[in-house]
Amino acid sequence: MTTIEKVEKHKLVVVIRTDTPEEAYEAAQACIKGGIKLIEITFSVPQAEDVIERLSKTEGITVGAGTVLKVSEAKKALKSGASYIVSPHLDEEIVKFTKSEGAVSIPGASTPTEILRAHQAGGDIIKLFPFVEMGGLKFLKTIRGPLPFIKYMPSGGVTLDNVSEYLASDVTGIIVGSAIIKQELIKAGDWQGITGLAGAFVQKVKSYSGSQ
Image (tube, rainbow, N blue to C red; front, side, top):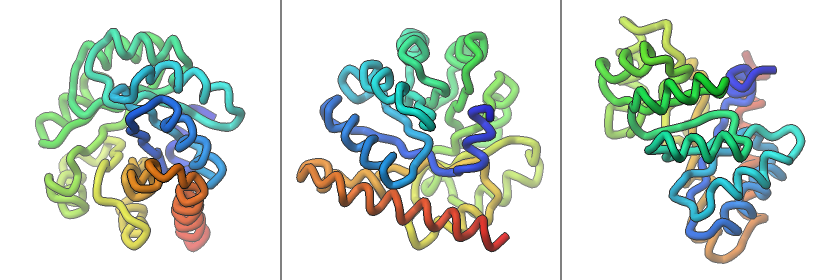
């Protein structure tokens, strides 16, 4: 199964942004215990590439790098075992390099022009960011009219209460952050709490898929 097929199947990509590499690793492990199959470690995490390398050895898990702002960061991430590269913006050089290495490119965009440029540059999936601020699900429905051929991945605003609405919008995947990786749980070392939230999201996706 390709990385894109995994995203299409499992839907949830949990983005982990913490102050220390150990917190990032523990949070990722907590998500994995909850059933999450796709983990994104942001390059704002100190020694992010080391966390990616540790996680990439976990069987059945697909690890990517997020907040990748430079080609040099993409190089570090892919060398460490990342399968996909996520950015909050469009940088054609990052997309080009990622694709040349055989990895999946997920650049960010927030306007029709940016979305189409990101797709034409080679972006496999386009991260809609910041999703809520750009109009949320209404924006997605509108933009899909003229651009139905693009694979979309919203980033922002998803909760346990509305994840079914996101799934109903036929997105390729959904980036989930603070709805699972709650900073108060991180600071308390409450990994079981994160596992519980991750599991609840996974069950929501399974329930939705089962009802289709």
